[in-house]
Image 1 (cartoon, protein in one colour):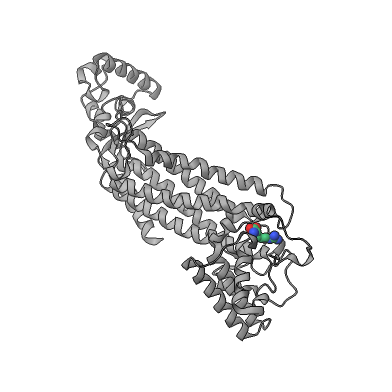
Image 2 (spheres, helix red, strand yellow):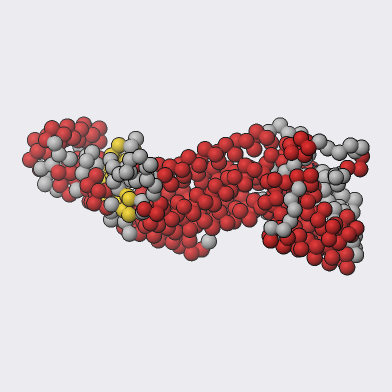
Length: 460
Ligand code: ARG
């Protein structure tokens, strides 16, 4: 079978080369964008009088037939066609005859692939953003129910200060909000059409790039053709945006795994999102969260792969760039299923509120509050207050109790300046509610943060 570009070749390509060179096994995913781009291109050629209008109609009809054939599963994908661009062009030509050979006027596969792939990345950035919003909504809904649920706030995975569970969830909401915004700014920046750039240097045909750009929903045509046929920043951006998203997903997953363990028992995953062990009948494993934690590995890998592919490439298009697609498809599909399952696991999990509150009675969470009390009410310099509190902690340990359970007499034995009002400072709930500075954990402040996020959700 002769290749579309086979004019100068005497022999056919080896099967081995076809296997190695072809991108059709994976770039067939871009058929929708390829047809969309071709329709815009052909419509523009018609408008400019480069192809007669009746031929334009027939070409567009044929492109739509091809789309239906692919969607019905009737399209013959053949490795010999090399890529989705040539496969579609060939089929269009089979349908409309010689007119089909005009479709590639004033176009190259270089601007074609850059356009298709950019459209794909823009569309997926929008749908992933939507999924992030749904995840945020799920987290906010859970947070609203737990603004008074005490949970030990930690640093170094050691008990630090009492917080509420809603507040903890809002920290993740803040991360996912940034992820959403990152996708949005990429969508905005990359809303640039490469179509009409030709192989690398533009075209002598009188084309209208504004027209195709608008038809494809881009903000404007690109500035410089040499750059835009070889620009894959948009692909790197989506890979980075997904990587960042997975950094956050992996941190949340890690906490969910810890919280569902026997040691914590803060949450229970629903049976529909947990797994069992083939040997240990008692086990209920957090496989979903573990896989989510692990998926970050592959998406980071995809980002690094493409960075390395692109690094040091001379202008303009190089075949190296065909390696841009599989990693992006993989990261996108990983993000899609991961966001859905994370949202569902969170929506269906059970919060073991009593255990969270019980855990707050371990680890002297209100020690900082005692130090603050000594500074505020007893006029003791902070460093000294820190030391006195240290002694109170040692005493509590000796008594086998938490600092929040200490009696006034025991505290006065350590420092006689301590008075009865200290007990309010040692209460876990008071401690949590005392941190009412902007962004703090107090229930009222957590509720304010929730309102703020809800307002944001309403306006996006
Ligand atoms: N299959 C190619 C890719 O994905 C399309 C562009 C080919 N261009 C070329 N000049 N060989 O990158």
